[in-house]
Each structure stands twice: as structure tokens, then as C-alpha cells.
Length: 207
Image (tube, rainbow, N blue to C red; front, side):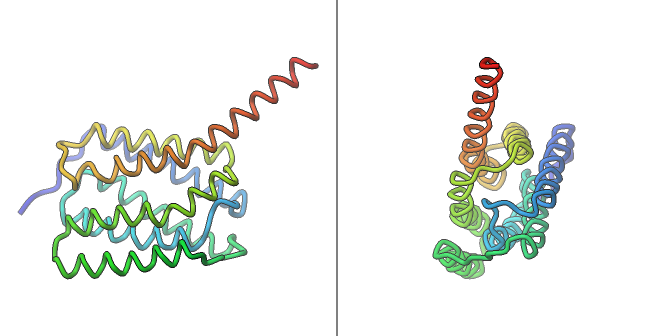
């Protein structure tokens, strides 16, 4: 039976950075009582998919378990918080499509009996489920604390890629896919705060 890889110093660094990112995001959600870019249904779907990814990653002895586990904890906490703070709780066609995809993935996973296939499909479904969230982020970018949290997530994904023992799908797919997704989610925040900084500097010069 294949054993889990031994914990390294880089694993501890990834753990600390991931925990910091999660704590900041949760604190900001509590402080702001939810944001316009956060949807209860999106995070609920993410939580379900994160649990699927964690189960299949555990079975495959993935080196990305720290990130996967952290993502699951974050999604579960935020979905619970947004039960209270997401007043609209609007279910859109995007969520309907993501739900259908989740059922399809679980069906294929159980039918094939392949945890690697289940892991791959669940990660793809997470990106599909997260598409509405990304669109909301571009329309209503988050706060500076949200930006800090996302940058920390980016750092943890990059570290996880470097920490991977090989380029097997079970070890490398999650951090690479979510690095790309997180870049897309972070860009509107960088753009927003860069424009604010430029306006602030302009006002200072005028004074």
C-alpha cells in the first residue's frame, strides 16, 4: 500500500500560509458581513466539491493534501457564514449547471471506481462552479484584506507546485489549476487598488 509522503519544512510553510489566507478571508467576511462578490450557493457547491477532491486526494496519497484540506475548510466555513450574510441567496443558471456536473462527476467516479478520474473531474467541476464567483469578483472587486488573502493563496499554490515530488496528476493538477483560477480572481482586486492608489497620489500632488 502506498504511504503518504513525509512532512517537510516546505509543507509547514505551505500550511502556515494557507491558514493565514483562510483566516484573513473568513475575518473579512465577518467584518463586512459578506460581500457582493460572495455567493452562498457558489461556496456550498465548492464545499461539496472540495470534500470530493479531499476524499479522492487522500485515496491517491496526493502531495497537495494540505491545500485541498485547507480549501475544504475554507469553503465549508464561508458557506456557513453566508447562510446568514448572503441576503439574496440567488440561485442562477450557473449554479444549476454546476450541480448537474457534480452529480455527473459522482456518477462517473463511482461507476469507474477510479479515484484519479474522480479527482480530475472534481477539480474541473470546481473551476466551472467557481466561474460565477469570478464574474462577480470582476464586477465588484473585494477589499484590500481580500487581496492579501488571495495573494497568500497564490503563494501557497506556487510553493505546492515546487514541493510536488513529481508531475503526476494527483500531485500537480490541483495547485496548477487553482493557481490559474486564483490569478483570474486576483487581477480585478489588483486593478482596483492600483487605481485607488493612483487617484490618492494624484490628490496628494494637487494639494
